[in-house]
Length: 232
Image (tube, rainbow, N blue to C red):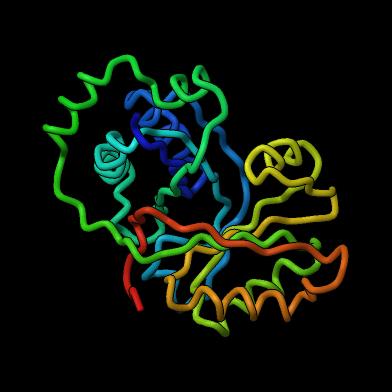
């Protein structure tokens, strides 16, 4: 069976429809979109693909075979090599319960067409492999503190998802945890070599060792693209 990937695409909100269209035209049967805001220091705003604008975070499930062509199509449609246009990365999906669910997510039908697309891929992309996704669920008044702490450890930006009101259900689906109305979800894409330092700095700054103050965890990233400028 094909391995599955969760592909994350973080872009300015006015580009959301282009992202969804790219997933649909590449046989992805499942996507959902969350809304948040990006934060980054002014001096790096011209070099990185994250800026101080409202963001959409679209997560779609794709097969391993579709990964490379998705990166290529998103690069073409969103110009991700240019600062401020966004980033895209993939996280491996370790398991799926139920044969029907797997077949739906993997989109078994049309595999010949997908192979033909891959054979005619748009261009050779230089994907970045040594990144980790860090997710922190914190109190609303701690989100900015978490970001400040992460920067002292070398992180260059983050995206905040408002996990309250109508967003709570989406956040629960995304992270598999219960997020109360008083929480925000902060996501960081960082180089693997600084992962421990970033997680420790955030945890200490916002008091995650204390009950009710939140949690922090990390996931391996399969590949990333759109991180423009300094790469460590």
